[in-house]
Image 1 (tube, rainbow, N blue to C red):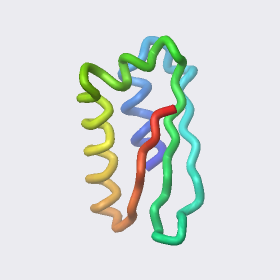
Image 2: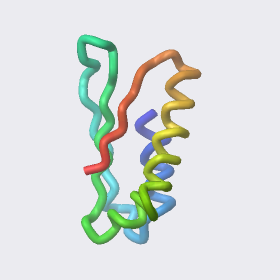
Image 3: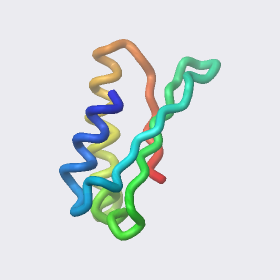
Image 4: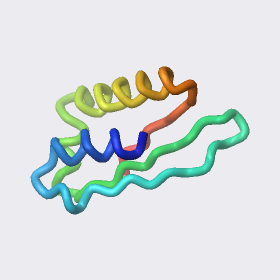
Length: 77
């Protein structure tokens, strides 16, 4: 899941070396939180107009998580 998120984010930004994904341990509900860190100048490319790209990223990752039988949450930092 982490690799999928990194691949998507690196394809969207101009400086893929500054993309970092950290993972928290699952909480009591079984939800694993993925934190996507990008350069501040690249934040607009990840979020998109009215959050459309961020929503699409979350949709793709959640679809993969559903297929794998896990619960995830994506935070863009």
